[in-house]
Length: 158
Image (cartoon, rainbow, N blue to C red; front, side, top):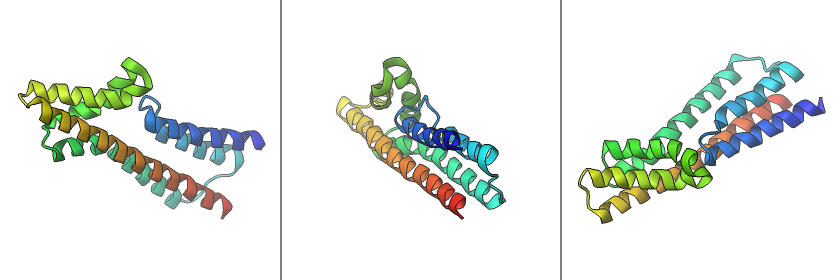
C-alpha cells in the first residue's frame, strides 16, 4: 500500500510542475493520483466528489487561458495580443525551455502589438501585462490545485 501512496504523492507533486511548464499537464496528474487511490486503495464513491473535482479542473483550465490574455486586454492590447499571450505560453517552453513560459508570451505579445502599429513603449506595457496575468494565473492555479488535493485528503480521512 505504501507504493500506491508514494505514486499518489508523486503525481500530485508533478501536477505543480505543470504550473510553470505548460507542456506538462498539471490537472491530469492530480486526476492520476485520484485514480490510483480509487483503483488501488479504496473507491472514492460519491458523485459529489467527482463533480467537485471536475468543476475545479475546468476552473483551472479557464484560469490558464484567461489570465494572461485578460491582462493584455486590460492594458489596451488587442484580441490578437491576448491570443499571442496564450500561444506564447505554449510555444515559448518548447523553443527555449522553462524560461520560455515567461519570455514567450512577453515577446510574442510585443511582436503582435507592434505589427498592429502600436508604439514600442505601449507594446512593452502590454507585454508586461501578459507577465502579470501569467503570475496571477499561476498563483490562482496553485491555490486551486491545493484545494483539490486538500478536498481529496478530507475525503480519504472521512
